[in-house]
Amino acid sequence: MSLSIGQVAERTGLSVHALRFYEKEGILANEVHRGPGGRRVYTQQDVDWLRMCIMLRMSGMPVPEIRRYTELVRQGDGNELQRLEILKEHQERVRQQMAQLQECMDLITYKVGIYEDYVNSIATRAVGQ
Image (cartoon, rainbow, N blue to C red):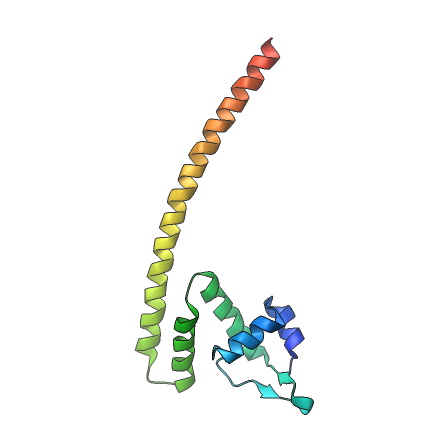
């Protein structure tokens, strides 16, 4: 099944411009073929790969690191340990980010509770008057 750049953009949530950027940056695992008239032709496999790359970017993996991972995948078997190292390092960074975000959430939750208590006490006093 072949897909146009517009269809891939729709399925991934990326803009056409972002898809071209990903291709230029060497982030696609497979070469993008061209159809009649030079239009890009994608596969479902490309869409699946892009979705994974989107998740890696959303979780903070830098584009050069995604490119490095992609290059290793393109090389094929024999470099699984390097791929694992890239993913484990990123996994640890994400764990640290999550811990920091939890600290932020704890503080925000605490502050929300203080303001809710305050607002409720004002409302209770107003009703009692």
